[in-house]
Length: 408
Image 1: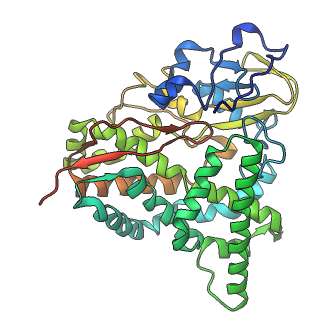
Image 2: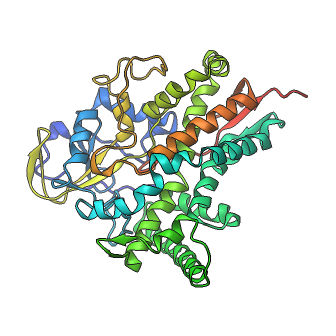
Image 3: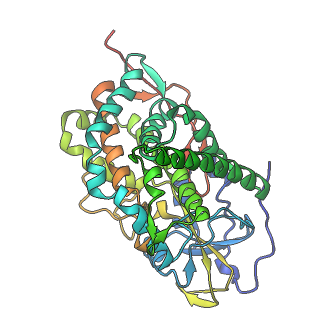
């Protein structure tokens, strides 16, 4: 069903900067999502305006996006929906600009810092072994459903203190949110998530009142301080909302895109099996090529930046995954090359809104890939597989059927 609006191009947008591209429904996205976005480097200006989805700017080049996400005074993070949605859910700290952003970030950052993440490595290795072990003897699986979702999502749910039996329910809610386009659907799924979070918070409050240990992140956030005071109830919900969406979706998507590539590169599979030191550059190259998050910004005042005249209220979308495909930053950027001398990307953004979970994400990627390679051996895409994608703000592969030979 067609859901886009294509209004008249605003008067301040020159004709040479208009390029009609739909971040959700472009025809080429159905064939190869990242390649469809990357072709914008060849076909569109580095900063261009599309009339699709209510009309907004897109930026595809590494250095220009870096400038935008760092300049929060001009390009605010307080709106994160394209098309714009009235009364959209607040995501903290994502939708806050400094200094308020910094206050909330500091409250959560210790849980995702290098020391806290490293302390979980043994637990993650054991769980990765268990998850891959469940499919290894079968000779086939849907990697998204059977591996890429259970591993990082369960890890996150354990960290947060979410009930493990709600795995399917919570994954479905996150997927509904990222697939929602119409304001009514966004509102409905947002309220459903908020309802779940309110219930979980009440459970944690009751457990704390009964003297229960505060071993999970949600329990500890009840005591967190912002500027010396407790987090207000609505702000706590907004903070948990962002953690819910990030923890239940993004790493799953990153895992899946790279494994899809690796399924077609048998020499690289062999190298990774034989050379453990190749795993780290493999992870970094996968992060460079297969980012999954695009980040919107709202222009706060009339200005001329990046060689373009912006007006207050304009929406700007930074296609962060395309930073790694920028030939001005990476030689032969479309090539998956774990031996490249240098690589540059913005997959986790940069500046004040650098992704809080990037240490955890890297560790999860490294551990899961290592365990998959160790247990599965050589693997391939299932015959006849045709990819299906979710595009837009957070991109995903919807399934990934794989096959391999078993010892039996």
